[in-house]
Amino acid sequence: MPNVDANLPKGLSGLVDLPKQREQLLNLFFNGKGIIRRPGVSTFTDSETVPVPVEGEGITRGAVKWVNPGTLTEEWYQVSAESFIKLEEDGTKTVYTPSIPGTTRVIFAKTVDFLVLITVGGNTAFYFDGTTLTAFATLPASGFRDVSVSENFFLYVTFNGSNIQVSADTTAEINTPDIVLGVFNPEDLPDKTTGIFNDNGDIFIGGTESFQLFRFDGSIASPGIPFAKVKGGTEPTGYVAGKTPYKGTFAFLGQPTGEAFGFFVKTQGDSEEISNDAVFEILNNEYTVAELQDCVGFRIFWKKVEIVLFTLARHTFGFAEGNWSLWQTGVLAQSGTANWRAAYPIFVYGKYRVGDTQNSRLGVLSNVYKEFDDSDITANLIEWRMRSFIIFNPDTFFQLNYIELDCLSGTGEIDLDVQPEEIVGVIGLTLSKDGQIFERDNEMVRSLGDLGKYQTRVRFSEYGGLGTYEKFLGYELRGTAPVNFSLEALDFGNDQ
Image (cartoon, rainbow, N blue to C red; front, side, top):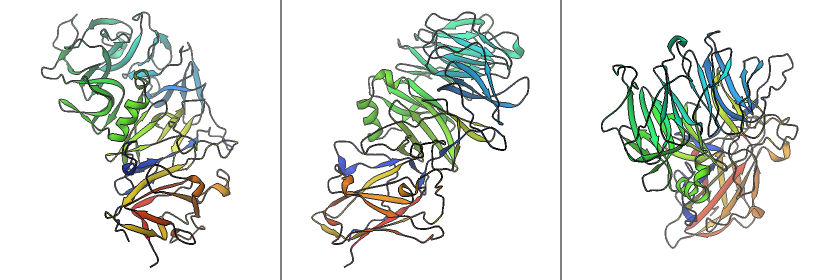
């Protein structure tokens, strides 16, 4: 009988060409102790006695929390389709004019006086003072790619990557954000500027082949640009997209000079790659450069775990406790891929509020195991999946009679008004002799047990046993029930 200690996967790993080494967590993640499910999404509703769903004006293109200078309260703002909206905790929605044209992502930057929003790749930008939304009087013909703020100066990256445009000082609304103080080109290398990030006062300006470090320098006499380059602050990792705060610095999708794409965390004087082999392979084999440039990054804290997420056209990668997982919306075919549709999580009014990348739904990240409320109760199910393997000693044949699973059971967390009884409360198991073929036609399905039966252990066995395996046994577990697992959850054995 094989001796297996920690037999559940901690994340996504392994190459397509080496199927016996591939592991996967889908809609689950490793929290440092075990495998737990990702958050679900409850529908955002108003505060009436009979709550009514509150929707945006269309797909969410960007979102931000901002303390309104007029009310001195934190407020949730979105660009929803072509509308700039404010959403209050009680569900009240305010739609401002003018409209925000286009379908591309919107990036925000803020001071205590102004909220600035730019359309990535569009030739529009706006500023908001808490009451009035105003279009920029002038801006470059190509528009902006990115924006950040330091010491009440807004710094805009032009979309064509030629330079950084700096606003005048907007302290106490002396100047508006569209008044240009000056323009500078930050790069030591002849590459295009692609992004900007303020990390506790350090201004990191990314190019296609490098990052450069700048800091605010108030001693520079007007009309000069009050930002000075830090000597020795250039390092050869280019910025592509997806910047997000993480671990006291920031994470991003990047590309070292002359090399392939990967995810990185900015460190002191360097960028540390956090992509593993599986993530690297997906990025570089399944995506075009244009698709990678549309990557959106964000961070949440869930169950006391800091999680950074990167959403692309067909995948959402989650990174927590040094391990990767995949997050997706919908129940798909075994080989299907999709991203997580929860758009731009913003912690406001005491919870994470989200939009949707495909329609006007608004939601709240919750411990539920569903995505919004829907008349089609199968449409909002969250399917989790884990795939891994065990390796026996060389030249060993193992007669497998049963697999026993120790997981959360008997909790009564299943809501039959949301999830139909015939497809919840069960776990499916599929086995493989080569790590490549997992035949769903031979899937075994077992119950999680009734309410209150907390000691239930899920046992998979068949008359005549589960087969004979040489050196290797691959397995896939999946379900839609809300379960968590310890790392030593599986017991492989025979009855002899």
